[in-house]
Amino acid sequence: MQMEQLVALCKRRGFIFQSSEIYGGIQGFWDYGPLGVELKRNVREAWWQDMVNSHNELVTPPGAPTPFSMVGLDCSIIMHPQVWKVSGHYDLFHDYMVDCRESRRRYRLDQVVGRWVEYDGQRVFVASDQSEDAFDAMQQKALKFFNLRGKDKGKLQWEEELITLDKLDDTSQVLAPDAKKLGTLTEPREFNLMFKTIVGALGSEEDTAFLRPETAQGIFVNFKNVLDSTRVKLPFGVAQIGKSFRNEITPRNYTFRSREFEQMEIEFFCHPDASQDWYRYWRDRRYQWYTNLGLAGDRLRLRDHDPDELSHYSTGTADIEYAFPFLAEGDFGELEGVAHRGDFDLRSHMEGKLDPATCPLEVEKDEHGQPRHRGSGENLNYFDDDSRERFTPHVIEPSAGADRATLAFLCEAYTEDEQPDEKGKMQRRTVMKLHPRLAPIKAAVFPLVKKDGMPERAREIYGALKQRFNVFYDEKGAVGRRYRRQDEAGTPYCITVDGQTMDDDTVTIRDRDTLEQWRVRSDEVVDQIAERLSR
Ligand code: GAP
Image (cartoon, rainbow, N blue to C red; front, top):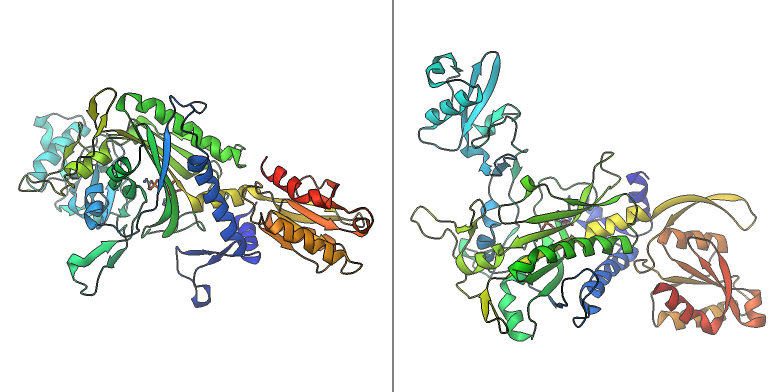
C-alpha cells in the first residue's frame, strides 16, 4: 500500500483532516473526522478496558508474577513548572543538543569546542566540553587517537582556529569529548520541546507554564494521593490517557510525529526485587495487545534496546515497533516504549532533579553546590505493612501513543481486492479490515429497495441496534455501492432487509472480510451482532 492512498482515503471518508485546512493547515496538527474520532475513541477505550476496567486484581493474569491492582487518573495538562524542571524536561528546552552514542553523554552543540588536527593524511576534529585547558585535553586525546606518544606532539598539525561544534556541517570526523571513536555524535536536535504558555493575567516570566510533553509526570506527582485515597498496595499500576504536546522540530509522516498527540501511559509501581519480572511481563503483555487487535503480521515487532542504548538508571527498555509504509524498507517506527525506570522518577520528585549520567544516581548540583532543581520534599516511599519494609518503588512504564496506534491500525487495515458485483462482474474494492472492536461503525442497515415496507423494517432494526452500537442506516443508491462505502469505512457487518424479510422476517448479514452472507431472524440481529463483536 502506498501511503498516499491511505491519506486520500482518510480525507475522503472522514478519518483524518489537516488541522485548520481552510487556512492552509498548520504543521504537526491533525483533526479526526467523523469516522476517525470513533476509531481513535475505540483505540483508547480498548486500551482502558483491557488495562484498567476489565483487570481483575484478585487473580494472577497469565505471565504475571502475582496479582496486582490497576487504577486510573486524569491529570491537568498544565502542571506546576517545577514538575518539568525536576523531571529533566526543562533543561532540554534550549538550543541544539547532540548525543554521543559511545559515552551516552549529551552536549550542547554551542558549548563543545574543538580544533582540526592532521596526522599521516587523516584530518580529525578533536572536541572538548571543557572551556579551560581545552587545548591540553585535546592534545592528549589526539595523541591517543593516533596511537602516538607524548614526545610525538610535534607530528600533529593543528589548525589555529578553536571553533564550536555548531560551526561544522558534518560530525562524521568528530572525536566527541568522551569518545574514543570517530563519528559517534547524533544529528543535532533542538530541544525546544515544551510549549510555553502564561498562566494568569499578569503575564510575567514567573507566570510561565508548559503544556505537558508527557502524561507520565502527572502520575508520579500523584503517587502519594493514589496511595492515600485508595487501598491499593504494591504492586499496582496507574493508567492515564491524555493529550501531550511537543514542539517537534520536524513533525512528519502524517500523524506519526505530531506536535499535539495523545498518550496512553501506565506507571507500574513494584518492589525493586520483582521489577525485572514485571518489566518482562509488561513488555510481553503490551506486545500481545497490538497483536490481539490485528497487528499480527511481521510488520509488528518487539525490539529490546541494546545495553548501550539504555540510560544508566534503566535496566531494560523495549520498543514495540511497526513497519509503517512511509518508512524505508526494513525500517520500523515506535508505537510504544516499555521502560524499566528504576526509582528515577519518584526519587527525582522527592530529592530534586537527578543527574541521569551518575551511577548510582545523584541529585544534580548547581555552581553553589545546591540542587539544580529542588524536589517536592514529600516522602514518596512506600511502607509495606506485611514485611515492615520501607523503600522507593521501582517503576515499569509502558508508554503508548494513541495516534500512532490508530495510524498503525489504519495502515494494517487498508486492503485492496477484487470482488464480484451483483452481476458477477469483478470490481476493485478498497476495504478497511479493522478489528471489529476498533471499527468506527459496527454495522450498517439497508433496505434493499425504498418500497414494499422494507425501509420501515430496516429502521426498526436500526433503532434496536443503535441502542447498543454505533450503527449506520443507508437507503440511497444501489445496494452494491452501499456495501462498498461500508467496506471503505471498515464496517464489519451489513444487514439487509429484502423481499424475503417481508415473508419470513429474516434478514441477511454480510461479513466484510469473507463476504459470506447468511440469514437470521430479525429479532436475533442485535444478539448476533453483539456476539460477533465480542469475539
Ligand atoms: N513517558 C515516556 C514517554 O513519553 P516517549 O517515547 O517520548 O516516552 C511515548 O513517548 C509514546 O508517545 C511513543 O511511543 C509514541 O507512541 C508517542 N509519541 C511520542 N511523541 C510523539 C509525537 N510527536 N507524535 C505522536 N506520538 C508521539
